[in-house]
Length: 302
Length: 280
Picture (cartoon, chains in turn cyan, yellow):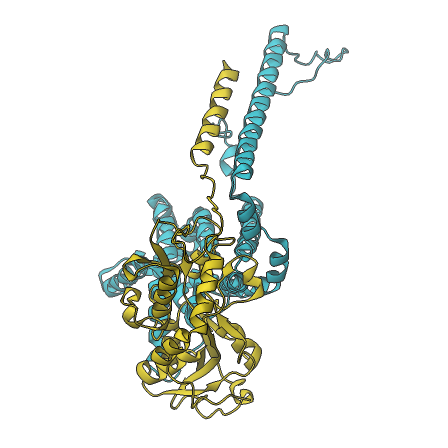
């Protein structure tokens, strides 16, 4: 819609297209409407925010709430312990994420594999997904964390972080397996047919044709699960490990002040937001994101 | 027309906020224990909070209304001192976070082995202390910690304690173990971690330690008391910050201490600490 103002350059070349007076009138009208709607949006946002802020600040309990949740001294005092806990969250998340993706992909492949001989494998994978997707994570943590070492078997870990990580992998791989399966099944059958007609085996077709398309389709939901995992990594604290949330809880009890929870919350948001932006950048670089915007007539959807 | 709509929006927002605006806190003049006009949540009723579950020997059978167990008995003694009959005492549940929350409280006083500390006193009101305790180390027969006789022996094993308790900080400070002390949600999980082998020894307050080694743990061993917190850990009744009841409740606890009631209740409900040597 951008067009050069002023008249086209004159010369031997044919004159370039210039918008008619009517078109310029329309453009000007649209610009004023756009400015107006921006102003209205701004004004309403600011008004609502002001009403909310004033309302909260005018409430009789506000000084107590501010002292209980936004105490700078307590925030600074609890920050080192919360940061140390967060480092545990990050490590657990990173290791578990890799293991989960591997296990989940294997599960998804086991569920989509064809042929009567593979029935036990399909049944096993389906049962696993049904059970661990159905069980609340906290139950899996308690059962694995307190039950497994209670058996006192040789070689069973008694480390809270390892046991907690195991419970996370069991639960999350069931979720992620379903995400992968959805991706695999969303690839059109003609893709497999084409691959097979080129002489690829079933396995090769899956590996070179179906999986690459499936994986890129499920990146956004996978991202969801990763963010979710980063927060649930804190649940291993019920087995004794001290993560960011637990460290904040300890500091909260010490000072009888909730500020450490706010500190932990801010830190969690600070690590999950960049996570989302990094995936966006990766996706854009690989050319998946907004791939449809290049199609004629497929601009941003309104 | 747009402006009208906008005004309406602002008006609705203001109304919504006004609707959820809380009433002003009523802070009456400080009443005395004797005139029977204490500003409690409900007139003529003293609402007391404790945790759920409540553990022995503090509350027997998780039923504080029976008055059995040290803290249940103390609550009824304080209520009587304030002029409330036993049937005028109501019990409610409150977690530690609920006890310290800044909003309107669901209780007049909370009794839940809350240790008095200067940091906590900045955000809570405490009565004067009704009990003084030390922290003790418990393990199981056959555990790597079973033969420990000193703090140095304990530094090499895995220690567990309940989150948010002075047991946890005392364990960290006094033992200074090579692996960080594990924190669990409640004392049931602390015991479970000990029997599962997630930790080798646990730190709890001395009356709890005596109770769980005698009654709850198979092969439980009380290794001894921690020195640093000895004499330093006092439990107080918790009230909302600036509560009008605080002076009266403190006066009641002081009176109970002076007339020997607290000592008698200790005698009745808390096992004798003899036989728990102080670890060096």
